[in-house]
Length: 393
Image 1 (tube, rainbow, N blue to C red):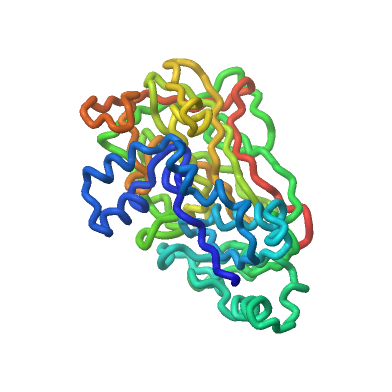
Image 2: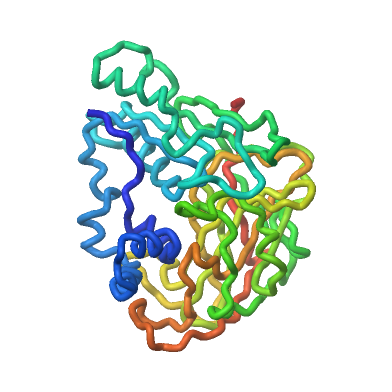
């Protein structure tokens, strides 16, 4: 039997970087009639314990013995799981599954995409039904239709996509493996709120802001469940002292990105625990700030989410954080800019950190304002690592 796989809900998809996905997971639980008391208890389970290990698909993938047609969308809540499961099962999985996987990644979300972008032929959450039917015919009806002779991966390359003005560079691409050939390239934050591929040379450069949990940055789009989905305009966030916008100069040539992305971020705080949120943004010539990816990390989980990894921040100490930004396929076109936005909240997409360092199930300790600093000098070169495609697609 060959099922369609959408990633199972797990600790790592509900607590991204150790931060609870409030509107996704909390909202879904409320929709099932779960009490606020039980949800509060659930939100305290960010640490990867035996209960998670026993029930999380991530720890049992080696038992999969079937071919799977993996379907996901770049703006979907399970985007990274779809890619990650495919890569493991196709390349490292059980010998009954290895080499027998397909991956389709479209330009859709877990609900209708909102904002002023629309991807022609980007698909829907049901994926490419015609190809799935061919897949099932091959595996369930022994129909020799040639599907296993075709490239294993189909993915949508997103590009400039304002409604009525979509670029022809928006298209579906077929390749044999994911990701395509690429070179990991660091784009460094620079003084003047700019971004460059050159390593910073300043002896001292930083930006600081006050993060008040009582006044979090509001969510504007992203990989959300059902509502507020997709590449909405981040100008709607407004100008805030706790929201830092960095951008490249206007691009003189296309920057084609496909694969996994990380952000190396040098920070300090005066709190025992706080969050940092990074956004990757495609800035259009007219200023539209299209959200591509946005992900957080909680200070206490900077070393990982197992019990032995948990460590509070040391107030005033500069530390390097690695923010897992998940994956995408995006062409930043000539005339656009690449934007990196840094802040400490994104609510209700992610739960707000009270900055007090209390236990996750402690609802009594008062929240506090955190003074957070982002560094981008020669000794602390904060950078997003983009997989720049090096092969012809």
